[in-house]
Amino acid sequence: MISKLVENAINAQIKVEEESSRIYLAMASWLETKGFPGAAAFLYRQTEEERMHLLKFIKYLNDRGGSAQIKELKAPQTKFKSLKEVFEKVLKHEEFVTASINTLYGVTIKAKDYTTSTFLQWFITEQIEEESTMRSIIDKMALLGEDKSGYFLIDKELATLALAPITAV
Ligand code: FEO
Image (cartoon, rainbow, N blue to C red; front, side, top):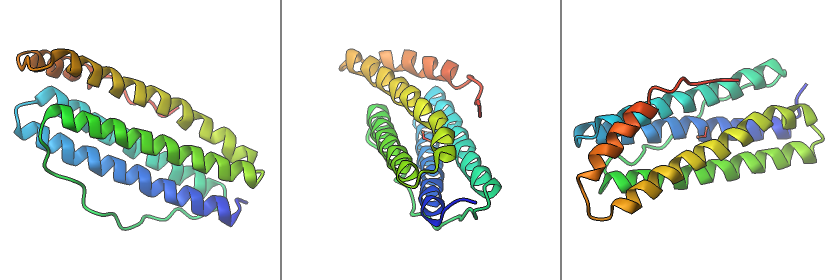
């Protein structure tokens, strides 16, 4: 049986993951209307990936005798200035998610719930990968400077990244 402390902390993380999914959904939709089909496809994929994260937490918590809570969410930002701004916001959000996972990990250590600490290892590794992917996309955009034609190539590259399978294990 999971402790109330860890249960509450996982429920807080479930909310973060669901919010992430909605934030990327709003971004993907905006990009789709602004002529960036590849970037939109990539963020639609991220939406699915965040949904998979949230399901992973829900199933884990329910399996351990806890009760997953689906909470009210605030509306995400729906308008942006540029493709670059979108990805800067994605990176900033992923850094927030990493900090949130680390806080949750700290709660499990304090509660001596090492089963949950081990479960969280997958998410810790996943966050390193997600932050690194977003950073490399932003780095490429920074190299372009004012060269708008290069954004077409980045959009094409993002369309390829969007085809990567979403893994849950
Ligand atoms: Fe589920 Fe991108 O953090």
